[in-house]
Figure 1: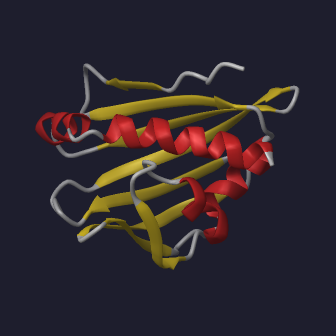
Figure 2: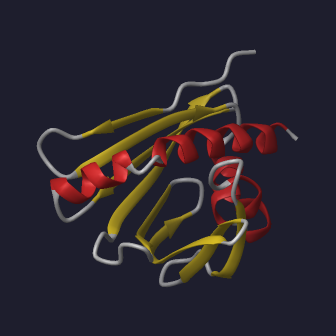
Length: 157
């Protein structure tokens, strides 16, 4: 079985990153994997980092903070959930604590493709093209692709 392709592209007109990925699971299952704290720690991020949650309240008006660790190296991330609609949409802010001025506004949408398949589309808007390009150059693609591969395995169970 081949691995589904993850599309990550920069928008030419606005400082936005577009991510698209299909999963062999229903929108309900893909949504649950994004909101359930016991599931999110199993797949979010690259393989070489351990994820721990400081807080995870995935509901409209909720907030989160998590850490990715490798040895003595630690990276914190936090944000707020602005709109959470089951099996449909999540709108949140996302901030890497190492660059707190680079806050992103992220919109995740789930599209039911039928036959137990879902297309996930993410639009991540930042303040400037410079910040967008810094995010793209940071290695984020590696973490996104590996995380979605782990999510595939989790959804298959």
